[in-house]
Image (cartoon, rainbow, N blue to C red; front, side):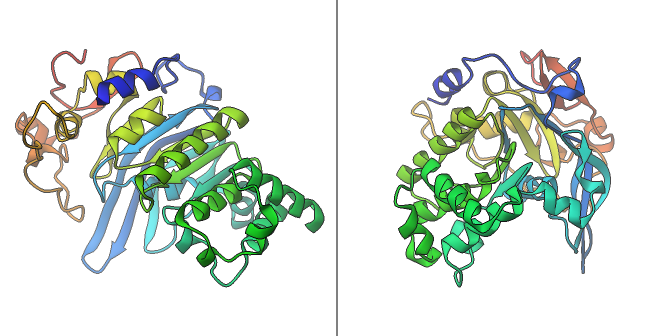
Length: 345
């Protein structure tokens, strides 16, 4: 079932970040991002050299287990890096500008106008003491630098664009008066009201039921097609990534271990972790799910080599001692593994 979905979603030309492409083609490019958290136990090495990219109009998925660094990467893109988190190195280039070098004023100017963020749980992200309209109008004023009257018109248009027709009633409501699906649509309207070229959606459907999930994902796809904006979709659901994205980045313990076109990664996984994730998907061909043995390593003291080596049945002394480089195995398909699976090349 997953392979059929992947084939359908990847019918168009591959848009994955690959070698030999001019950097100007990328709307977003993350290079060797390293981020840590200062904790009472020590320094948690949360992101270890994360690199990925997205072109205008491209939908890019970041998938992996809980705690792998998906949300930390998403928040870093928006400049949401506050203590105890801190960046130790790398670059996040948005339209050629390094987000990590921006001042607080430059970050405020960037958010909403150039990049926007869709939070995981809209009802927690929205202010329950302010009306939806006041929050949406404020977002429009900040992003568009317009009058309140113009911002109100832009807010009503944004609500209509996300399928909420009764704009006046919605704008007069508070977030606790809305359903989960309506609140998430409002959150997307706030993200899009400034005409952002990049949407970063952090698990935007995890708190919604299945039918509403499908509506929200369809809405994000329609917005991307209509506006030409790029989408970074953070999800733990491989099916969601397959149905809605052209490119996938598989993260494990703070590193992108495999990346490439969805069809290529799903049909010929090169990293043992990716293959294990796919094997764990429900299938009518298997009576039991293939769970991944072992546990994620402690990121206060991660292994010096491959971070998956303690759970990998292909691991050698080289894997346990030397960090693998990110190497190509197919056009636009890369893997960080000393011993890529056969058939990937």
